[in-house]
Length: 240
Ligand SMILES: *Cc1c(COP(=O)(O)O)cnc(C)c1O
Image 1 (cartoon, rainbow, N blue to C red):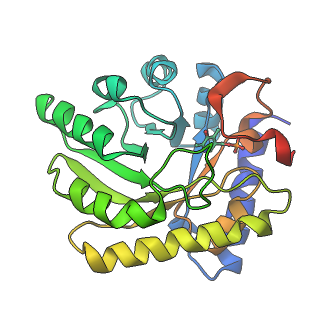
Image 2 (image 1 turned 120 degrees about the vertical axis):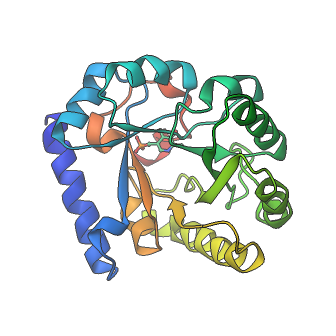
């Protein structure tokens, strides 16, 4: 199937999941994750109607950002090393993967230098897997309080990666927990917007939408399987 056919199928599935959850269709945005694929694939998704694209590495993203029309919105979804913060600032309309106060401080410093405000999400390791980056739920509130003081960062919500399970229903508690954590932060830190919940990928986005996802990050269902080893992705082989 072509990227354009895949894109329409994913849109249809997202719309059905939103409807089943009693949510308006436009409350869920699809981030088309083009990592490991060339700019021409990202362009094909754009031509099919995708306007939000996701990449997990800054250096891989930059040439694609240059290649695509200016109204494409780019999101950084992968772990960002502190020494790459300078390259990421201002290039991505949303950084999903802020996973330490140290990184946030560096993003603040770089945003100040470039006189920009950078929208971000905090990544949470809900399931407590050693392999994943992100704040532990227990440390989230304190970290969010520190980060909320950084006036060059705009806190828009939370992001998580579901656990590698065969049945997406087994990931649902993680998505529900992320929503509950977000609701708690809304009470504790009402000055930030906390609108976005970035959760759900190819194998589990329907469950995530049921639990309130506003951004689903979908790669393989749009672009096809990635070649082995590529993309520094979360462990995916387990749930083919
Ligand atoms: C690769 C990646 C995705 C997309 O995964 P698919 O299984 O291809 O949909 C989503 N989120 C993150 C953080 C990723 O690295």
